[in-house]
Amino acid sequence: MATWKKLSLLLSIIPILLLLAYGFKTNPREVPSPLVGHQAPPFALTMFDGSGNSLEQLRGKPVVLNFWASWCFPACYEEAPHLEAAWQTYRDRGLIVIGVDIQDRDADAKAFIERFKLSFPNGPDPQGKITIDYGVYGVPETFFIKRDGTIHYKHVGALDAKVLKAKIDEML
Amino acid sequence: MQNVNGGRSYDNYGRRGRVILPLLLAIVLWAWPSAALAGSLEEQTLRLAAELRCPVCQNLSVADSPSEMATQMRELIHEKLKNGESPEQIRSYFVSRYGEWVLLAPTRQGFNWLAWLLPFVAILGGGGIIVVTIRRSIRRGQKSNADASRPLDPRYTSRLDAELKESER
Image (cartoon, rainbow over all chains, first blue to last red; front, side):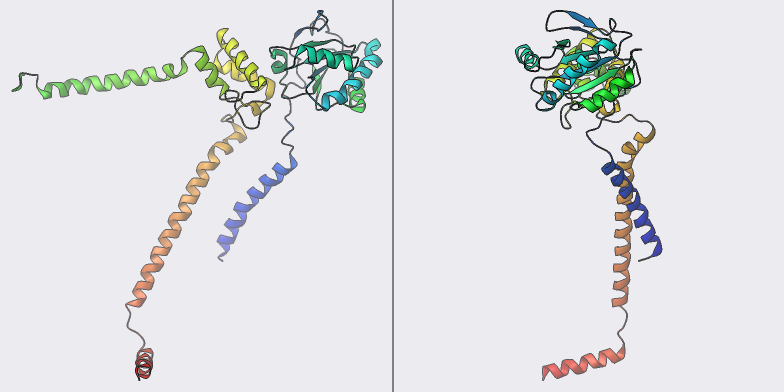
């Protein structure tokens, strides 16, 4: 085979191999949020107990905003006790934990709250406006919002005690 | 001018046609983009939704997905259009929330140009290779035909004749 043929074959294969290597290195499920490092979108949520809450009211406090659903098994079931524990541990230091229940039935959501004895505020997002505003594409997803209202970190999937502690400590 | 049937001359129509047809074409071309952009709010919503990727689906657009998330996104697009937001503003809103990932077709800028141009480069390159290969094979065929018309070596002819005679015996 002529040298130029070998060279052109090599030159056409190398970019394909590089592209494949890049593709194998990246996680197709990992979609970075463009919101991290930016101001958290404002929201107003009516809780299951009828009380209201908005991000504007919470300015100056670090917030853990968790998107969940009762049908999200097992991930939401795994992280719920950790969220409640974090709320109990850090609430005196000013931390706010808020749960946003998405694409769910109220009765199922209330049963979930009852099952895990969740005492932090939880409310439904029936029209999905908060969900879309935060660029949520699945449950559970959790946003860590700093005192100045910027999004510090976004966690996709079930939270564990270690991640919760580390991220809350970074914000406090 | 009147023709034999009492009608107007075809020449007359032809002259008018030469004026009217380009005029009609110009009107259609002028109106086409605005007609395509317009349409009912529902049509505009679906057109925009078809450009966005459903976040909870596998390669489905917001327009095609029956999921609750896609339904909520369509409702939001409809509401934003109703409030007077332009399709570009709505597209930007979704990109600001989900990133460029939410667009089914990548924007024509920077590294994304590779996705737009590579298929055409591959088609042109492939076409070029096919043309060169065909030309070469034609040239090779012509050469072998030219070789066939040349007189054979007398040594082979005499040997061939001898072997044919031997086989006939």
